[in-house]
Length: 604
Image (cartoon, rainbow, N blue to C red):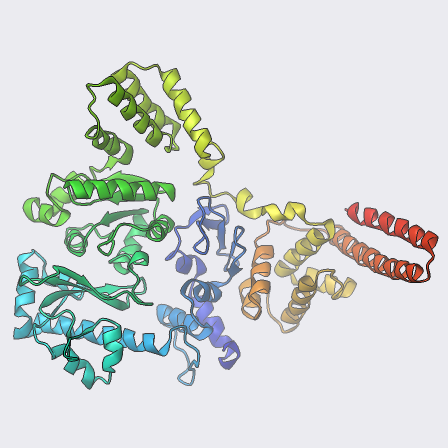
């Protein structure tokens, strides 16, 4: 697809979208030196190995080896085709693509494209009914009675599905949508008499959007006693509750800004809190928090404040969610509500300011909350129960990374139950050793050039491979070095992939291009080569490399090539000697091969 659009258009789109800004919408990036670091969005990790360079406009993960520029990042993270990634970035930056440009490829099936269109039409339709018609007055009044203002209703595109069997069906029929598709998606329900009706009839509608802001499902709440009280769209390829977080599209910029997210249980909690000024709130889809959702939150924020209902069920759900979030590396705090209160009715009872100051800002560290919660499960007047309680608390304290925080709570235990600090400290150390917490877990939040710039695999590479990679790294940033290598070495690299990269780089400079790694990557069609170039471009280099150093790299590469050729020739001679049944000559040649191979290992 790339060659069907003018190169200057692709270049304009790429340059209009700073890679740090774009990737920063998916990963919490922290600057260290000249680069930015974060947790890789392509594989699970607790220690950041994902690096982005603004200067070169590329990214590379030293964990999973993914790498490329801003366009390839969007293709990887969203599953876009090249054209879809380019169109997304063009829209984002306000860059116009040629009218003749079109894409025969689409990452979504035709069925899913139609469903997105149906959801878009219905979102507008239900919202219009709520705001501007008599049919929607009942739903509109419900939201107003819940304290929502016009601006909030508009921001969340809240709607109402009239309690009429064929209302939605007839609307979508006129738009050309097939009934079978709508039944499969759960927008229409098939009755026993083979008739169909609106799945959400008589309910207020909460459009559920993905992170790009596209509606991919609905949540419906009954307001006239229907059962069930809450109803979601059916699970589908587009709508998977375990992967989605309600309001993530609106909240993510506020989450990134604060490096903090507030996790709620329900739609109305999120909406009421948003109106109250807490705009970094999201909610699960009526299910327990999943590992995938926890990892998503960790990529965007350091801290998660859990604000669930104040009843016993909410407390139990808080503990389970917190344990999962802590395992993924998040700092967890708990916003405590009075018994039988939820965020929505707290705001209605006490107001927005009280919610922000007395609930969100006054949230407790999880371990303090947990210690108080745990006491309810034990009869502390009994010695055996006290011991069990203390051991349960120690299990949680062992997960805390901060030695200061651990000591604070250990002193509380020591003073309250008359146990020496030495005993408690030893118990904590034992638990941490067994769980592996002592093994460099303190590096979790270190964003260092040393870590990201030194992948472990390089230690195992032969000298000639390291020489080739280093030489190409310098070639990528300096056309003069590339010209010198072309004259001295040409395509004489030992590794096939290095030969291809070097040859392409020679052509890149011959075409008058500058040392623009992002542009060079754009013209590589092989994903593996893109990743390899990104890795080499991220390699920390000394400024002002001398001709002698370049010549040393070339010498190592040539020596390897020559010795490898000699080994191949000797192995052929050995094979012939064996065929001629001359074991003495074959043995002599074998000794020569061994000696040459030793020399290869000693090349430096």
